[in-house]
Amino acid sequence: MNSPTHSRWRRPLLNVLAAGLGLGLPGAARGQPAAGAPAAIRLEAETGRTIGAVKVATAGSGYSGTGYVTDFLDDGDRVTLNFPAKAGLYALAIRYRSPHKGFLVDVDGLTLSGMFDESHGTFVEKNFGKVALRDGGNVLAIHGGWKHYEVDRVDLTPVAALPALEKPPATLCDPEATPAARALMDYLVEQYGRRTLSGTIEGPDVDYVLEKTGQSPAIVAADLLDATTSSIRHAGVAPMPTEQLIERARQGHIISAFWHWRAPSGLLDTTIRHPDGTTENVRWYMGFYTKATTFDLEAVLAHPESQDYALLLADIDMVAGELRKLADRGIPVLWRPLHEAEGGWFWWGAKGPKPFIQLWRLVHDRLTRVDGLHNLIWVYTGTANPAWYPGDDVVDLIGVDEYPPDVRDPLSASWDDVQARFGGRKLAALSEFGGVPDVAAARALGVTWGYFASWHQDLGPRKMDPAELRRLYNEPPVLNLAELPRDRWAPAAVKTAH
Image 1 (tube, rainbow, N blue to C red):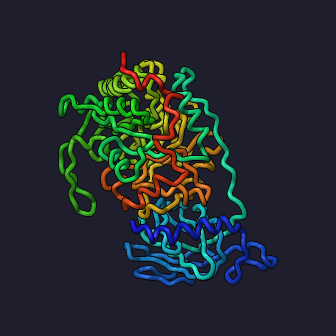
Image 2 (tube, rainbow, N blue to C red):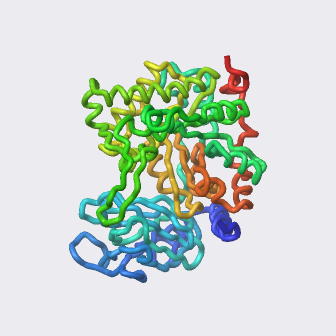
Image 3 (cartoon, rainbow, N blue to C red):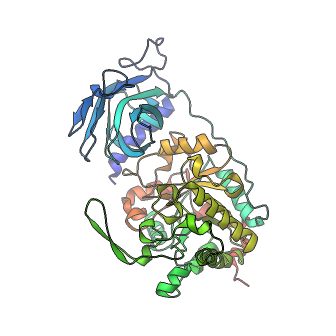
C-alpha cells in the first residue's frame, strides 16, 4: 500500500470531523434548504458516464428519474458520477435491483465493498454506511464485485452527528463461565468504543509485527483444523497449535481459537467439473469446504442414531480436548467455531440456517455441559441476517470477517448493519481482516470494532507497506500487548501447568 496516497485520504477526513459536519451543499441538492443548512444529494445513475457494457435502460417500472443503468458484466464495466459537495460525512444509500450480489463503489479514489440484498425483482433502497466527501468536485463510481445488478440512483445525506456507541453488558452466555473468562469479557467491554485491540494469526506474522512496528499484537489466534477424526484417518495425528497458544498466553497475549472443521466423513479426493467447463482438484484436506465433502449435515442431524452423528460428537469432543489444555491452565479463549456459515462455502452452512443453528447449539451444549469447558467466550462470525443467528443465550460476541479490495475501507456499512441488529446487546469485532485496518480513520466515521485479527501470509500484516504497518500499530486507538493488564484475567497462564 502506498502510504502517501493513504494519507491524502485519511487526513482530510479527520479535518472534516474537526471542522464540524452538516454543511450546506449547493447545486445537486433535493429541495430548497435554508441557507447554511445541510442538503442531501441525489445522483440519478442514468446521468452518469457509462463505461464498458453498461447502458441506460427503461424497461419495467419502479425506477426514479428517466431510467437506470444495467449490464454490469465484466470487471471494467462501471458508471461514474461527478458532483459538487461541501466537506463532511454523508450517509450513502443506493437504490438498486439485484439478486444477492456483491459490488464495489469508489468515492474519490477510495474503494468500498458492499452487498446488494435480494430485491425480488423490484428496485429497493439500502443504506451502505457513511462516506467522507471533500469540498468542491467529487467522483463516485459503481462497478465490479459479483456484477449482474442494476442501479437506479445514489443518495448522499449529510450526517449531523455520529451516533453514540451503546455498550453491551459484559455478561457471558455460559452461567458457569470461569472468573478469568468473565474478567476478560469485562475488559473487552470496558475498552469497547475507546480502544481497538490488535491481533493476528499464530506463527511468523506475530514476530514480523514486532520486528516492523516495535509492538506485539494483543490477540493471537490459531486454527484447530486437525482436531477431527477424519484428519486422523487420512493423515494420522498431527501437531496442534495448542502448546504455542499456551506459550503466547504466558507472554500475556489474549488467545483466540477457530476451527476449520473437516467434515466427519465423506471427504473427497477427486476432480470436479464446474458448469462453465473448468475443472478443479479437490483433496481431503480441503474437507471443511462444501465442495470437498459429501457430508450432509441436515440428514445427519435428523438421525442421531447414525454413525455419522457419532462421528460428529467425537469431533466435538476431540476439539474439546485441545481447548481443555487451555482451560486447565486458566486461559480464557475467544472461541470462534462454525464461522462464515451464511456463505455456504463451508459444509456447516451448506444446508441453510436451520441445520446450522442446530449444530451451533449442539456444539455449545456439548462443550459446556458434557465436556465441562467454561473458559470460552463464544464468537459468532456472520452478518446481521437474523435467520442465521443462533441466539443470545449461546453467543457472547459478534465477529465479522472482511477482506476488502482496499484495506483503507473503513467498513462503515458492515459496522452499521451489525449495530442496527446487535447494538447494546453484543460487542462487535473484526474476527478476520485481510491486511491491517486503519483504526483511527474508521473511528472518524464512528466505526469502533472491539478488536481486529489480521489473517496471515499475503493477507496478513505482510500485505502492508512496512512504514504504514508501523503507523497503524502505533496510533493511539490501537491497543497492543504491552498495555494489556495480563494478570487481570489469567494469572495462571504465566505459570507451568499442573
